[in-house]
Image (tube, rainbow, N blue to C red):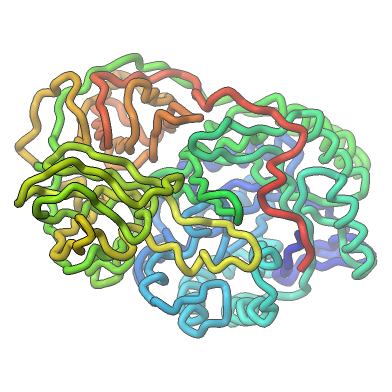
Length: 610
């Protein structure tokens, strides 16, 4: 698969070589996403990149977090992309900047904001005018913030991606030109360059030959060299074995090529940001919270055996031919601590949780993106609870399986769970009487971020209940809909609630549990072990750590020390099924037993040319 990149004025190419500031340059780059790593750790990761022999860092930009709703822009904290780029430059790294608008990245809907789906005719990643205008507004706000950080202005940004993985999605080449023109309105693009993505030199040799045939002027660049892979819920923990990794990295360097290692440091899919994949003939596959990726730097930024081999190979095959014989010392791994087991102190039943929200009334069970919520732009992430009063009956049926996972309750008793693997749209709920309370808790498990060529699914990634719900073939009307996004306003209402009670062993969810971790000294990184719990999310000091689920492969949630504080740390757990009386903080992750392969999943991201 090839990609198209543009330099920003100072980086050019000639005779098969990159030229920067008039001198030949081989790009040894690693991907790290600022939005997956807490800002306090950016410099630590940059220094470990430099110590591995890298001279460049590459990052995507998640449109859906920077403009969560139209015209509401956010570049603070973990989203301070300008500070990330600035620090990279200070640490001696160039930057390859990938502003989307589509990024894939195992990120919810490939980074596109969900409010685009409010338009029933939306055609993303195309020249559909409302989509192009939305991209233009985003670029007009984003790019001026970093324009002075281009290399031509003395900054570290040497290249910008025009679009991502477009050839595996569409043949509308005019859209590539449109996005490039939109970017050029606010940023200086110069030469365009095709690059390759691959996990092995068997693929890489073919793509390198293709690039050379197009023009001997083009440098050989593998833009995404995959040193590992990502995980889906309910499937084994994946990895790429070190001999296969060594062979590919050595092959690229022996060919005189440049590379970007995707990922060099994966980080974490905090909150509800993990995406999903969908392939024809298979099924929806949501991604886990950890984005460890079996990368050279672990999820917690630790040095791995793969890192050490990369360092040796880059020095020997990439740097010594340039006269560089040594590398900076490797900074030590940050300390980890097992804070031990603590008991749940209080619980809030689901009835009380719902009482804190003002429901939306609707004749139909509206989709998440179509809810009259946040000035009419809908709900972006999280859960939706649909509630209705029903009459006597026995069989509940859906037009379509709710997206993506639905728990069905009658008078508080769970009757069924439907998800992406369900085939039967009918549920026998037993004989119920008039005036019964039907509740359907639907979880948006992540919008698909990658689809195969020819699929229209990107334009259909709306979540919640699609179509009607019937009881004994009679359509249910008049719904009360509760958006449960677990954002700051909702969390504040949970904190202020006076109905917290002592926990009772064996109480079933949904419920919210609370506990407090007391830390006497400076906090260290730790891992929250959710053994004994079933499924839900954890919020630490108002920060959403992400999902846990007993189906695995992961069992822990990574907690970087900067999210903790000396003293009291409040933990809220939204458990959907069955609670446990304790949680444990341990000093190492439990990512599942790793299935190490010689190549990454061949069913994902097929190689093809644009």
